[in-house]
Image 1 (cartoon, one colour):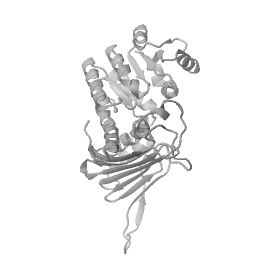
Image 2 (cartoon, one colour):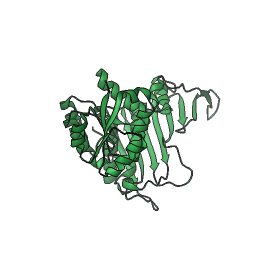
Image 3 (tube, one colour):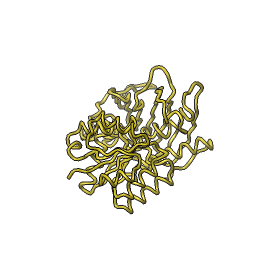
Image 4 (cartoon, one colour):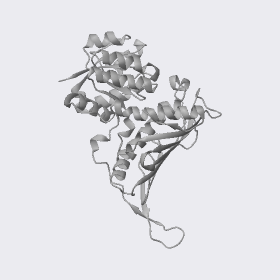
Length: 344
C-alpha cells in the first residue's frame, strides 16, 4: 500500500526530507507526495518543480489539502512557532505525523500533542536525524558494550558561524532550541540515561548576527551520576567544529574521542609506573545496523515501519519529549541563573 503524504513547510529544510525519500528505493516505492502546503504558494511550486512532483496538490490551507489528497501522513517542516497548530490539524484529520525538531515550543504543547496522538491512535514522531548517523551509533554501541567501563561523562563542543538569514536569526534561544537539541538528544541516546537537572548560561556574544541566544554553556546531570557538558556557539567564526559537535566520552576504564566526522580515538588505562599511568589504544566497532545510519532516510523508514507494522519509532514523541525537556530546562536555567530540575 502506498501512503499519501502531505508536506507542510516548503523551505530549505524540506529538501532534505524529499531527497531522502527520492534516493531511498523502499521509501520512494511506499510514499507518494500528494500535497505541498506553504504560506507562499510560489515556494511550494518551486519545490515541486525541483523534485519533479507533477501530480501534487499545492495550497496554503493545510486542512483543505489534507482532505483533497486523502492524506495518510503529514510531514511537518514548519517553523517551531507554527508546529502545534500544524500537528494538531494533521492528527485531527486522521494522519500519522512526522515533525521537524523541536517537537513543540513548550512542554505544555508537547504533552498536548502526545495526548492528541494517543487519542487519535496515530503515530507521532520527530526527526532527530542526527542520532541516525554512524558516529553516534558507534558511540552508543561502545558504551553499551562497556568498551571504556561505566560511563561517567560526556563532553561536547560545538562552534560554527553559519549565516542563515531568515527565521533563525530572529528566534529567541536560537542555539538551544534549534541546534543544541540535536546534541542533547544524541547524548541522551548514547548514555541511555535519564536527564535529571541542568545549569545553563546562555549569551548572545558581541558580534552575533542573531537576535538572541547564539551561544550557551550547560552542565546536565544524568541518572547514575553521569555528567553531560555542552559548550556551543552559532556565531563562532574561524576554524569550526563538525556540525555533530566534537565529543569526549569518559568511563571508568578509559576514554573515547570523536571529532564529529571520521576520527575516532579510544584508549584504556595503561600500566606505566609513576604519576600518569599511560594508556593503550583500542578499536571502536562500527555501528551494529547500517540501516540506522542514513539520517533523514533512517528516521522516515522507522516512522513508516511503525505505521505499517504497528511498532514504535525510535523518535516517538512520547520519548522525544525528554529531549525537549532538556532544552526547556536549559532555557529556564539560563533565565533564572539557577539549577533547574528536568521533568518531561
